[in-house]
Image (tube, rainbow, N blue to C red; front, side):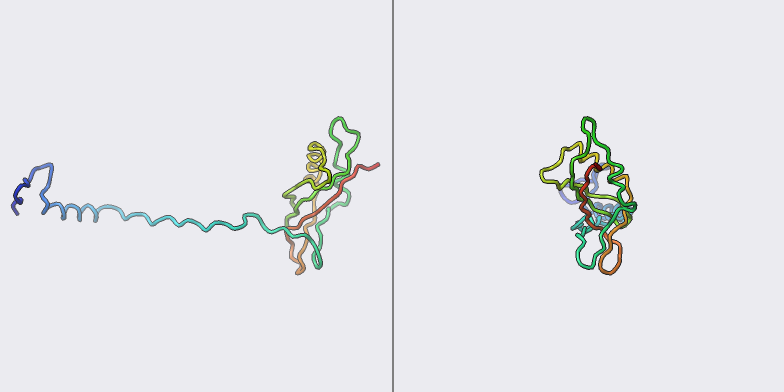
Length: 147
């Protein structure tokens, strides 16, 4: 086919009539475009629900009663641990999670850190829901120095 008026066939620039077959050949040889990535749905709650034991629930407990009180040591400069109330979650495997001081007024940070260290060193029996299944449950504990 002859080039149309105003268009010349050159080695570097094909004529319009040759462009379509070349484009089709290039598309056929190219690998298929990857499928669009599926964006996962956002997780509404990344953490499990923690329940406060109430009617029908079995509360979590220390595997060895008194373990926390025995393991807590007064921070340097203190002769004992003032009364501290802490709240933490006990996972189904007995691990401690989400530790916080709920004392009023709040205890000194070094005292809370020492109680946290002692709590983490102890083993806990997880709580159970009303059906008897182990569950994430909150535990509130008041720690006092033995007199």
